[in-house]
Length: 386
Image 1: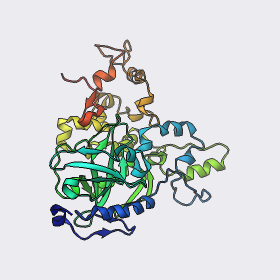
Image 2: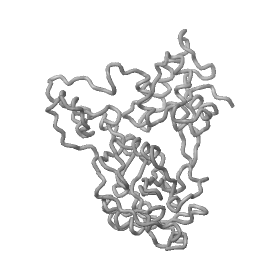
Image 3: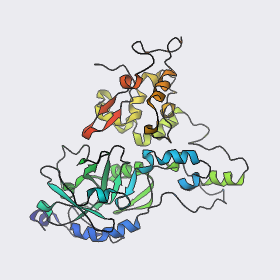
């Protein structure tokens, strides 16, 4: 190993699954030898499960999206094309191996050039030859549907043994481009592990995986009870009792998100659990509203006059079908959503004095350019200052 590795290396930590990992940095080749075990141990469950529905006295359990499909085929089909259906995968179950293997990427100083290799069994590895020689670093999971970017994640123990998630410094973009991960351009590695990406631990790491999965539990350097991506029961809750009643009754019972007391606030809290609420950012960010906040749509929506002056009834599903990807919606549909409250000639409505029937989104909710060409529409609906 290189001089840097020799100065940082501690004993190789081996998890209960036999996955050898870097302890801030141990030998990456030892991680690689155990990574195949991690791939086979992590669940690839896409939601098809055998569930007993006979006992209504037990707490509801997850049944999986394929069971939901029995009665909700249309929503199942719509959801299949939604970004939510592809937010988390094992790298070995994606096409990222073929996209990266055999390629290299100069990630700038002091990081260096990554070289990517496949082990021929679905595993993908990164190397930094100039710094760590031929030591392979495994890339385990991939976050993101590909509609914006796909970024790989590796779980490893830090110097104190606490699990760290290393968000890889390089991502794949929808146009096939391999480039720096958003937000990484100004980073500097603070440990040997961070030469491969940004490290998180504790609650931030747990929240990251929580928001990209339906079920997941970090145990050491592996994920147990994994149901990847955001499926039906992530929002609707465990469905076993609903399914039991539906199968037993000639007329299926109503069932949706929440309870009879479900309201706009409840929906905002549900969506904001992952899409962020004001509590997720600093008071300074709320005051100054930097461009980065457009990624967190509820924060902008909650300060919009459209929300405040609608008796706070405007909510996410006023404009969005949560099962349907925006790519399948026509832009005129969004204009009609706006005109439902802003019709010209209607005394109780406030119509746009500039253009009352077109251009609503482009003017009042424009797409904001962020890092690496990513765009998000600003949900603080307003007359913007020039």
